[in-house]
Length: 178
Image (cartoon, rainbow, N blue to C red; front, side, top):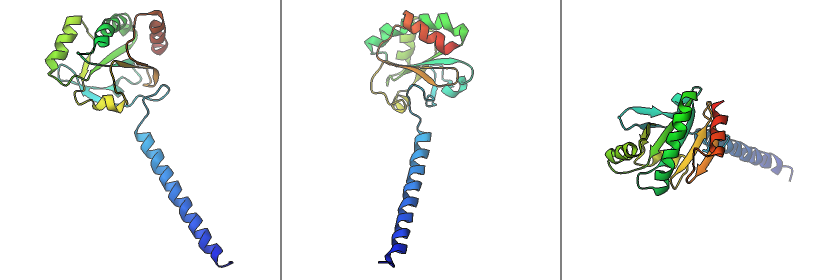
């Protein structure tokens, strides 16, 4: 029995090392895959705008609060929500608010442009036709919104339609603009 202790100790050490390495790898993977949840930094992304320029979320970090809205031209609640976003944008853009409207339309970008023009929307529309950023944010439906503070931390998440001009939304916007 005495001879089995060194072998047992070696086995236990091997298991501990393996578990430690596995935990380190898991922690590293989680650090590279930030959670799109309230209190966590928003996952960074870069997408083309309607005019062909590239917009990167992290470019706003330290400068502006950001409302990320995932939407589509065929989405009826999106059509209702967008004008309220435009009103909030006009009221708050001078105070440091940026809106990034991420379209998940798979069709031609002219459909997105026509939608924006029809509703008189002036905030940037970003194009995510392959829905890669939608997946990065672990979403399955539109509309969905994430309100980020100036440090890029998610402070509010809304799944579904929201009136961005109602008193509660106005209060949320004021909080992230501080």
